[in-house]
Length: 498
Image 1 (cartoon, helix red, strand yellow):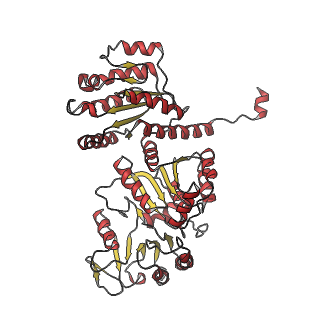
Image 2: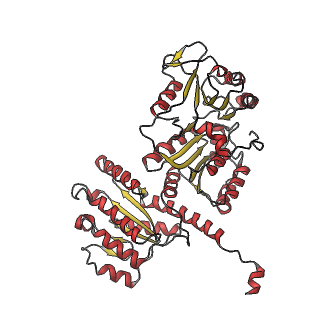
Image 3: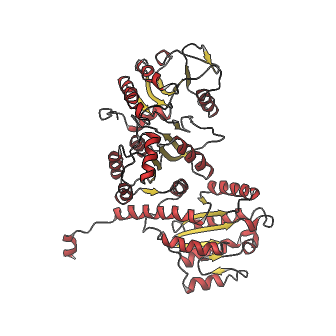
C-alpha cells in the first residue's frame, strides 16, 4: 500500500482522477472493435463521458473513430485513469514506460497473485506502478462504476447518481450489487471492484467514501483479511457517522479455500467479523439480498435521533403472512405488540368491513382496502398513528388479489395515504412497504412499476416481510449504537455522588 501521509491534498481530491477522470486511456482496444476494451469505450460514451479518450495500440492509427497512441507516454495530456486488459506479463513494462504520466491504472487482467505462479509478477506490477508515481487498482478486477464521472464496467440501460458507495473484492458480485440494487431502488455514488488489492484496497476506498460528501451509506463485499486492522481503525474512528454494511465471504473453512483461489485472499477469523459491529456500529449481513435490502433501508430512512425504534405495526392484506412475520420479527428483537384497549376501540369505531383484524397486525382483505378507491387506508392509519403510536409501520400488500379487480389508482392512493399521515406525525415512525407477488409475469411488471413509484416517493420497498425485518433490525442496531454513544457515561464517582 502506498504511503500517502505526506500528501497534503484531501482524500477526496486525491481520488478525484479515479472517480471523475478528465482523461481516460484504454490499453488493449482492437481495430476490429469487438474486444472488452472497445466495449468499455462504447459504454462510457453512452453514459455521456465528455473527457478525452486515448486508445493505446502499438500500430493502429485510430480505434473506434478515436486517434490511437503507441504508449501511455505519448498521449496529448497526462492520463487520469488507464484501463488495462492485455497479457499479464506485458503490463509491468507498459507501466514502466508511462513516464510518470498516469495517475490511476486499473488492471483487468488476471494471472497475478490469485495464482501461486503469479505472485512475483504481481510484485513487479506493483513496483512499476510505484516507480511511476501512479496508484494501482486490481489486478484481476473489473474496475469502477462512477455515475458522476460517467464511467462504468457493466452495461447500463439507465443510471442515476445516488449516495451509496460500494467496494467489492469480487467483480461478479460487484456487478450483481450494482444491477440488482438499481432494480430495487438503491442508487450509487460509486461501485469499485478491487480484485487482488495489490495497491488500493478496501480500506482505501472506505477512507474515500467516509470523506466523500456525496456518499451517505457504505457497502462492502470482503474476502480478504489483509488490511483488516486499518479498516477496523477507520470504522472505529468514524464513530458510525455513516452506516457501513459488510457482506463477508470466507467465514467457513470451505469459504476460506474458495476466497484464496478467487482473489489470492486470506479470509481471516470469523470471530473478528462477528465482533466488528459491537465495536464500530457497522452491520454484517449473510447474503447478497440482505446486503441490498440493508443498503436500501439506510438510503431511504433517516436514523431516529431518539431511543431506537422497536415497536412495529403491520398493516395490509397479509393474513397468515402477518402471523409468520410477527414470529420472525420477534426473533430479530422487533416487537409486534397488540394495541391497547383504547386503540382497538378507535379502530372498531371505523366500522371496517367484515374480515378485518384490528389488534396488530391490522389485516384487511383486499376488497376492504379497495373501499373509497383505497382512501379508507388513511382513516385506518390516522388511528394507528394517533392511538397505536408505532415506531415502525410496515405496510404489506399481497398484489395478487388486486389484479383484475382493483381500480388503477388504489395502490397509489394507499402509498399517498401513508405519506399524508406521516406528514401529520413527523418523526414518529419509520415506514417500509412490502409488495408481495406470486411470480406471474403481469404481476411482476405491476410490482416493478409500484416499486419505482414508491422509491420516487421516498418509501423503501421489499419483496417479503422477512426481507423488511432484516433491514429494519439492522437499522435498529445502528440506532442503538449511535444512541448509546450519545448518552452521558456514568462513572463510579458520579454514582457515589447520587
